[in-house]
Length: 193
Image (cartoon, rainbow, N blue to C red; front, side, top):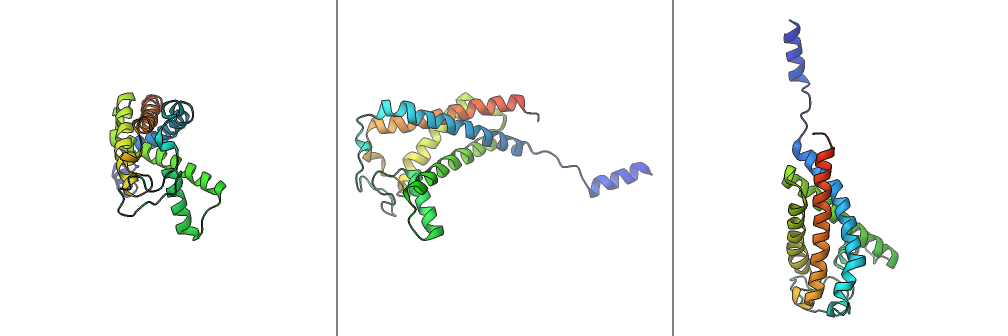
């Protein structure tokens, strides 16, 4: 009789089964923080050495606009700042102040890195590591930085920047991917299933 009652309780209140996809997404999310930190270090310390003298450093209007929406960024504005500004204007119906624009750019940058990490974790599961992270970072660069962002008008098209500017942005995404992959692999080892 007691086994029948236990079986009925189990049917009525089943024990939650931990989802491996959920665990992997959380690991990816945490690793996305590390990857974003590494990307930031690349962008502030190494990228200037690669891109110094690049033609994309000087703000220009309408250089290789490939967006059907037109140029949605102002000259010299990063794609993260442009997206943050658009979201702010959509909500507040006014232009953000300079300090707010900087904070919005950082918020978009960090959100993208963390969401990218969660996506990486959920998609790759236990196959997370330095090589998969590098490939993921390169894929983000190609799909987001070189295609989707210019198509949305948040930055100029690929022909507006020279090879050094493209290399600097690719390097930043590879740094992100390496930090992401290594952190995810480490977290997979130390966190329980």
